[in-house]
Image 1 (tube, rainbow, N blue to C red):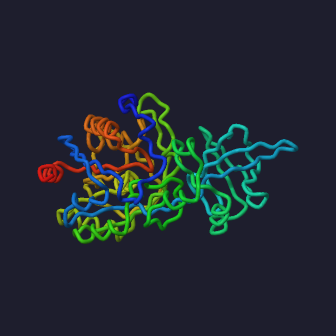
Image 2 (cartoon, one colour; image 1 turned 45 degrees about the horizontal axis):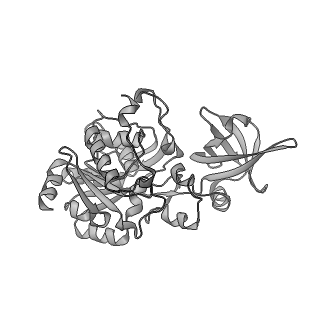
Image 3 (cartoon, rainbow, N blue to C red; image 1 turned 60 degrees about the vertical axis):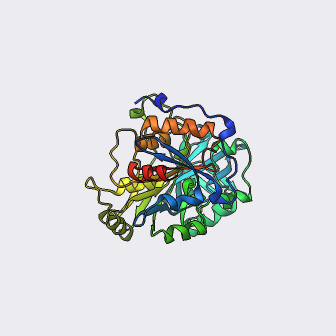
Length: 360
């Protein structure tokens, strides 16, 4: 497929630089997957569109301060570099996207923290990817990142303003618990304890999986054809307990509702062709485009994504390309806020969406 097929006009005025306050006051566009009908709602009313027996699946990864600024030294010469860690490959090593990577040499040391926090370049890949081995490991490395690192805000926010302390709160879900992400699972940023109470009262179960979102989620698609694009891998896990619980939900007639594309991608990676969710751990580079047959997920809550992005391709695969183009056109015209701190959408299968459409 042509990448141009997933392009659309997005005015800068629709790009959110700060989240809605409170979190659950963001707008929610409810989209009927087949008919394309659209309903304007509020995120806090999500439970009204769920049924007893449904299951919400959240990504409980926690964003770490993975943006580093460092200095490389070669003799008397020094130069500044910027690194965004995106995948941990050992207790003391990370792969990173680096500004100025071409000038780095294998074996060279980069100072990321006043000579206290150093890293050696052990490998170089394509497109600015570098492997760093740090002078500390395990929990000590985690503490060093907290001290010297910055929250890696998406480029479309970082280009317009700097990171501040509020971002350390805003750019984290209230249920985050597994350190390792360098980007937030943004659909989950809308949830509050009050929403959890309403969801529980509706008879909807909550389940957690872990996918450590990498910086590759921000990378533009640079090819003309989707067949030529390679996704960067991200690591994650689905526990045996969660797999069993979700299979029971399906067996009893409930729907699996993924909160965010990261939860969806992980569930689809962990599900066999017969629709059984399996315990799973490892790296996934699954790339979902129109024509993909979904095995695990029945409905999807997700924020609004970039033009020509792999995530817009995913939602187009889930609900139909024309349906999503129409929905995004409506969202732009209606003042919906896009991207990580923006509003959200709920992509529902026909029968339930039609029922609620008639009732509204």
